[in-house]
Length: 312
Image 1 (cartoon, rainbow, N blue to C red):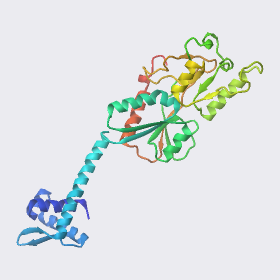
Image 2 (cartoon, rainbow, N blue to C red; image 1 turned 120 degrees about the horizontal axis):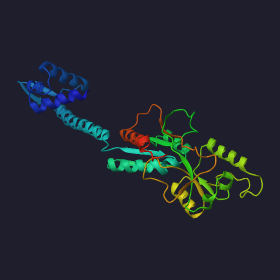
Image 3 (cartoon, rainbow, N blue to C red; image 1 turned 120 degrees about the vertical axis):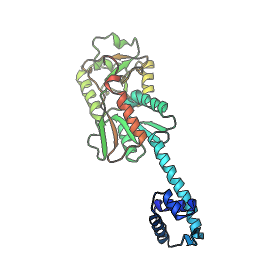
Image 4 (cartoon, rainbow, N blue to C red; image 1 turned 180 degrees about the vertical axis):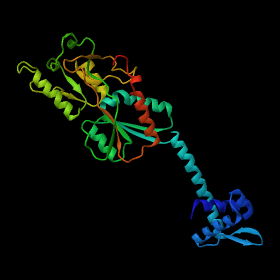
């Protein structure tokens, strides 16, 4: 049984004759008759009595006709729904973001998506890269954006690199470290140093350089790692910087108007070239939804060179 055959049956009921029904569906009369006959053969039931030049539906025909109208209405609604989905009038979006990405472009992209597509159902999750990867594999996320240096050899993933964003240490205005020239990792460790969970190779590199900078005596904190506070929430990190004299690691905003408010960058000797390593991560072989495609385009737009703050 085909939807086209049901359309022919409905046309026959609406037009009242094979001739007029054939014209309505742009078929010859013999072709329309064969279509109805094939439908009857498939259902193994007589649907139409063809006597005295009139069209009379049997009891089975009336039942099939009623269901055919419902099915055709549903099919038309499916077409309308797909058009709405493509136009983002309906649909959903589940995005994962690493801490750095959430604190900068994640909020901005979510705000713009909400402005442009107010009917979308949207959910944003912030977590470390390993957790986001697990949720993506479980189909709980459409995509995620995070530092992917630990995911280079993960099977089943498709990684699309995004432009790098400069990263810096930040402190509150008038922090004592701002008076030092230069600021070293060793002097940094006289205060709390906070940041999100870092990729393994980045964390190891910081600790190697911090150990090389130690004199071995008189260093507060003994043999602690450089980062003695780990937190994936950007707001909490900012609060630590403002209230606990902490130096925090954070990216510079990828677009104007979204800076690390009330904090100032702290240049650290030997760490001037720090950058993010963002990628957009999706499941290999999975077609993105229209909403996920629009979000991906928006992130690319926000991170384009034209959107970057001057001088960065």
